[in-house]
Length: 182
Image 1 (cartoon, rainbow, N blue to C red):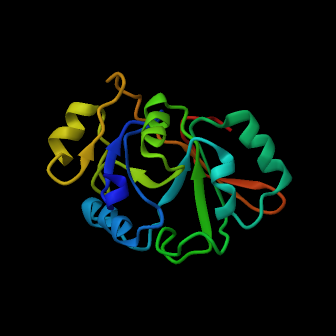
Image 2: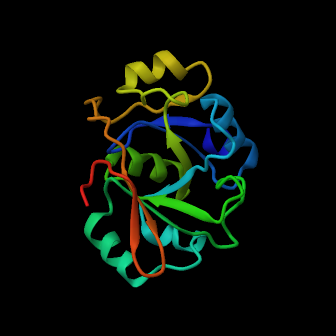
């Protein structure tokens, strides 16, 4: 479905997400439409390996490698200055890109099955609502408009979002305190 430009709903280690091919502008626009998301709010890029995300980042401060080593895969989103390879339509024409590597067998299986390495993604919900909690809720709310990927197990997540850090040249700023406490 992803190769055909479709959006999928899938389980991660924090909250359920919507994802699509990050190079497909039409698919990215579908996420905005489904969520009723403000076009000024960027999506993030997720992969199962940091090497797959590096090309979308212009500069990676040395301290960020320590954060990556310690917390990824896991519930941490790092925001960096984007490279020229990162499509503007993913980042709402901004100059930064968020990246994340979930600690999730479901997410790894989704990427392995897809044969690709990166998804453009956001939480699986309508804007200003809580993310869905499980497969049944994802099916009920979104199966008529996206493919809902059945998880390996349907144990509910705690629904605590990732911690979000803005990585500047010298240090980071916490933009959202989430599952990882810093």
